[in-house]
Length: 426
Image (tube, rainbow, N blue to C red; front, side, top):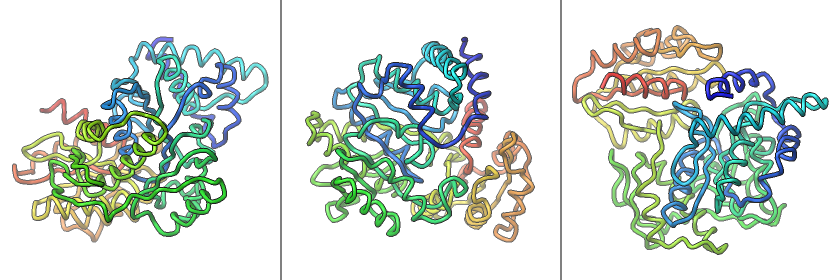
């Protein structure tokens, strides 16, 4: 298949999506079980798991290890799902992997087995790629939940990380933090060490502690008493943690929380025999890049992209705005998906905005701009129904002064689209 044919094929496989490990287990067995030849870091959580994985991956690379990284979802290009040695898989190599996987998927279907989903095939492609690239270790981010997520087909990782848990994907994972934490804690396996975020929700922490006790797994929580925050600004943060002075380019106090989780995961790996000196940990954090999380893509006006689309994500976004950007006029462009808790998220973001422009990304899953605007009603003095994302951005940029902030937030589809559009108009 060509790269374009691969995209078409994966889009058609969306209809097979469901939670469970049977299909991915069959697929990988027919591919030679590449996951059995790799060592892993595995991360689950509602918010922060992507940033945490990116930090761990960057630390491993800075320490001279060849690491793989699997993330979900992507912002602009499907190849962002899979990286090794500091670079995303090429489109040509991605198409080659998916051509091989398609043949096996069709073999499964012909043999009476269910066809694997697009996410299961992406997971398989990542594992196959990491094994063939000779990765020393693979960092895997769950797609949805943990217990039944396709990435949970891997054997016991060296370390699993559970980042902050809050309510999201309620239809699939449950309506309470406790229920969702039970699914996330499903990545905890006997033989690993578990690291969870400092400040983890109390109900979630209780579930994680119980899972660790049941599996005989050591639980590590970052020591906030060993943390000193020297700076938290729009250029990132500088901290001292366990005697190490560290710079974090990702913006917001929540990224300090994610960094502590990443550091503790690195220390677990060091205790397992990997050479991860303090200088490498510091260099890895300093070099980390992670798009779409309070990412500045323009300076005048300052344009920030943030994929906050659930209550926990909105909480940390608004905290960062108040701490770092207080006093500046905010023009917000926001779009959401229908299956997200937009009735909670939209009003809170609107209340922090001077101008609120409701956007729609189009597509079957997108919440119409009229519904976004309706949810914001009464929470901002100036609410617009902007229509397409392109029109919303044009309106925001035309009205913004150099000292203002244009904030684009909500669905990652909105963030990816905004990043492309803003790059085209620079």
